[in-house]
Image (cartoon, rainbow, N blue to C red):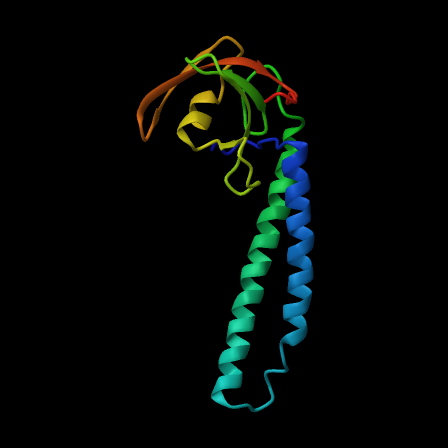
Length: 158
């Protein structure tokens, strides 16, 4: 991915916002279990406190990552509809004539069968393309291709 701010889809934004709320709740629970470290305790208590402190630091990092990503997406503005980018909904046609509507996203966004990540072979091939462009990419079964049919809102037959 480039250093430029990347937009995200409304669905991905909702998923990140939900994850952020869940992480904040989990953080409150973990922080509430930490004890005053000035009290003397046995080694098991100290080890348990260290694990909770590590968990708290991990939660804080993920909260910051999501917060930064949401801010970046806001600066980037809406998802482009004239060229494929992260957050785009793309209708593609495969050589056998089948068409599929895909969402180009980030690996951390959502677990969805219509999501292709920007760093996957197909996702990477789609980036920067316009309707009518052919894309070529590698799969575990060999070389593959598709044609960008349209960019925009998902259709219900996808």
